[in-house]
Amino acid sequence: MQVCPTFIPLEHLHEGALHRGLLQAAAFHRALRDCPERTVWVRGGGDLDRLDGRVGLMLSMEGAEPLGWDPGLIDAFWELGVRMVSLTWNRRNAFADGLGEPEGGGLSRLGEQLVDRLAALGAMLDLAHASERTFFDVLDRAPQATILVSHAGCRSVCWTPRNLSDEQLRALAERGGVLGIMALPLTVDPDAPTLDRLIDHVDYAVELIGIDHVGLGADFIRQVHRALGGGPIHDALLPPGMQSDACIEELEGPRDYPNLVAALVRRGYEGERLDAILAGNFLRLFRNGLPAA
Image (cartoon, rainbow, N blue to C red; front, side, top):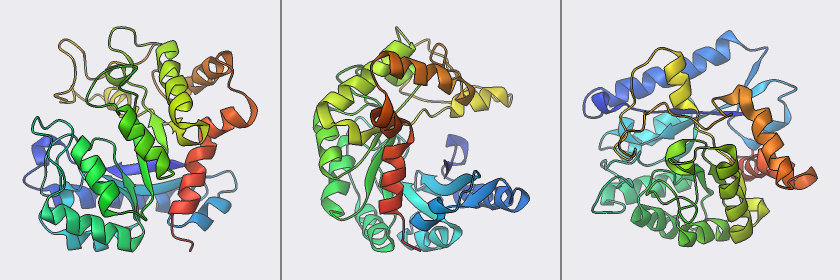
């Protein structure tokens, strides 16, 4: 299964965000139409039972910028298939503060309305990139919603605002959520971007919140961007001197997942515990969090 997020680059943040979001949703549907023998549109939990060797594709929204100032527009994106939403990407928008904002604000009034609507629709709420206050505001505002953090690390292993504090990790687990361990040097360890350091994050999270709440959220988008000939990706959180397309040693992209699996096995993950991290925990979350139909 592949989660396919809409994302608005900085240059389109204030103008054309809705247009860009719709273009990306259209590309998602074009992929489904062009490859029916290889893909399945995932809108409900039952769709996960009819993959039959095909790749399930689920549309998500990484940052609610396409909605502009209108929470009601989320209904249109829901009809297009969006089933997972993060309110922001590091920066502030009309709905919430991201973790890149020094003031560390939370949900706005519009953000509260958006969270209420997302909860009513049954959308899964992704708290990656949210400021700490936004993180806890969402938990309080939507007590019945399915919560996850799709890609981040553990702040106690590597300190960066992009990672989660122990308090956040515990709160995520209490809500039945899953943390996807991110595979970028920024969150793993800028000074030692290795597989062993990535597994340190897995070990720490498993010990703190339990095996059922840890998965993989590599976020290889920067490597894909480089492969397609793109230039640097702006990220104010990157340490000075770090290239935006930097990658973990022996884990440059999806083709290197066998290296990650081998590293997990060396740390003692095997059988059900290994399966839980590789896929089981997120598949359980999606089955429970997606609409039944």
